[in-house]
Image (tube, rainbow, N blue to C red; front, side):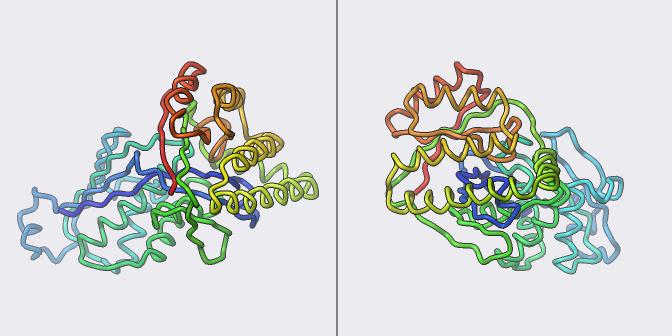
Length: 320
């Protein structure tokens, strides 16, 4: 039996524009995790000794989503089937013994916390450990990205990157990743609207807007890119006041991209009224999560205000 886990993530700045080559900042959220356990299937005696030379049946057990089925019965583009198949191909395992891949996750689905990428990373690493093969972080991230395309259509690659490395990342598509560090600890309250919002849909809608008016959309993306770079400077210097204002600015630009929602706007305003230094949606938008930068001692009050404003759940996390 081999077990692996992977954290969730939040995008601090730069969502959507990152798909178009602008930078983004993202950090892991260790308070939520996806876990994968790979074990030999006990019902086949020879699988215990590894003497079964024929191709074994692989079962996928994901009770959180009510799935318990054979890999062979799932469609090839099913995300869980895809990640197992992609991992086995990368590991050059053509005839695996009978296996069970069990998946649990505390990361809400379609909420902007990187649920799909976290599951992929956990499964890939659990399978590589089971077969005693070593995959580099770069390789794990690249494999998870292949599966991300099923979730999101045209993903930037930021989810699989920050989740694979488990560190704060300054990300530009198709460029080497950069790890950044906060000059002083930063506390964020994450609030879930409770509305499922698949990133693929909002990314597709922004793509349509871009095709209709590339000049305007490129200008918005440029503005977001400038905010991201200023935010990185503020984070590395530990200047929280300026960072909060940049979050507010980024949220306004995301509203211009039509990816916010009344629920997200309500939570953002509630956070600001309760003393947050700044707040914005995080991720694909149209639902999912928002984040608020707060003074550590004020986190409980902001979390309470967000719950009162309709948040389904809140998470307090620290970036260092």
